[in-house]
Length: 186
Image 1: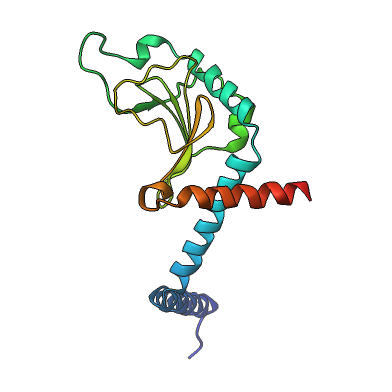
Image 2: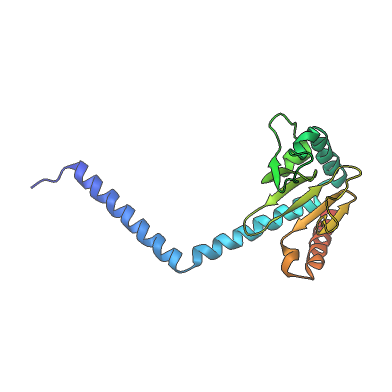
């Protein structure tokens, strides 16, 4: 009995898909794929930290962030005047022009706090970090307000989840900056 080419092709493709799924299952079970993914994510995250901390003009970034904040109508910052203060943030409206220095950073999120500052989040998920940009003469909304983890310039603060669990994290950031500033100057 002669088997048609169409049936042979279906059987071959089916076997190939089955073995790919089987191979994928064993790779995932061995944690190899997870380790590769985590190593890649850590490397990407570190490269984005270097971009933000070492290769970005912080004065230009601060001015760009303030330019965005100046385009936001003040009534958007407290949509309940005289009432309870809003907590949280909202996305930058589409009609607001995003300056090139911020576009070049490609932040994951660009948010405006109801408290009146701009958040540029470079990474989310396993490693939150970025900058908070405050307008000139910013008045903190409460006595316990935290500006950020590390002041880069007056009005420009770096934040990073690494500070939450490591009291010596600032030293790691110093080392990162020193390493990449040195490499740029060579």
